[in-house]
Amino acid sequence: MPTIIAVANGKGGVGKTSLAAHLAGLAALSGWRTLAIDLDPQANLARDLGYLERDENDGGEGLFLAVIASQTPAPITDVRKNLDAISGGPGTRKLSNNLAMGAHNLQNTGLDALRDALAPLVAEYDLVVLDLPPGEAYVQQAAFRMADHVIIPTTGDDAANDGLSLVLENYEAARAANPALTVLGIVVTQMQVGAKAMLRETIEDLESIVEGEVRIFEPPVRYAKKAARDCRHQGLLAFEYEEAMARAPKWWEARRSGAKAQSFADNAGGLAGDYQRLTEAILQAATAEAG
Ligand SMILES: Nc1ncnc2c1ncn2[C@@H]1O[C@H](COP(=O)(O)OP(=O)(O)OP(=O)(O)O)[C@@H](O)[C@H]1O
Ligand SMILES: [Mg+2]
Image (cartoon, rainbow, N blue to C red):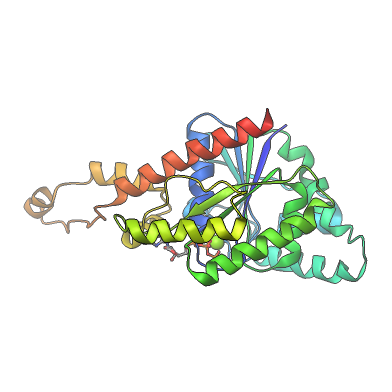
């Protein structure tokens, strides 16, 4: 059976998609057969993993049909070696509306439909990463019913921590239907390098919110605005961006040939390292919990 990890925070812009993309991409690189599922109508995962323009990108229609017609969606294959994806988009919005409409029904069987329709596909993988939208409570509930673990990224500001608390409430609600679900941990994101006091305060805040019961993963993901922006723009993960940087002509070579030298973020290597260490820690924690 695969390990299914949902990346969630009720607050937008805290780095859910960036983390989901790197977790999926790096796990795949290390040999885990991985499926990344984009449950967000914004469909940002398509940019981060670079499959936005692929013909098989159905904008979330497959996920919608999974819920309303019990059809198992076809993934976009070989997004990377060992990595397939199911795309989000307008279809995911329809899915969300559909789940919300079923909410008057106390059982809300639609919430299980996602898990049931995906089950035959999911069984082919070692790891499944679910990228969740901010809000969309019913999508979150459906995801929590099929997941083994939740990971909550937060920037540590009060609004992001409110979003974290909301996830913890929804997690408790989902456990009635999926008792095996655990919060694997919290990831601190977009943290200034060297801001030791701020990191300490952030961790203290988080420890008081979760009353010390939830692991806070190391390391935090460093703040690296240009690298994050370039990676998304180019559909590259941070380590791939770092490789592209190493291959690019040096500025004097570009200058000699009359080409425009490409500018790169100089902290991409650090960002790539953060995601690599985090992925290692997350996979280790998930493996340990699986016993
Ligand atoms: N390490 C980082 N340092 C600085 N900015 C970052 C970093 N990682 C991501 N960002 C930027 O933060 C923004 C939000 O990132 P991301 O899309 O991963 O968050 P999200 O939680 O998935 O957002 P949403 O809730 O909209 O789905 C993006 O503009 C991205 O470029
Ligand atoms: Mg996102």
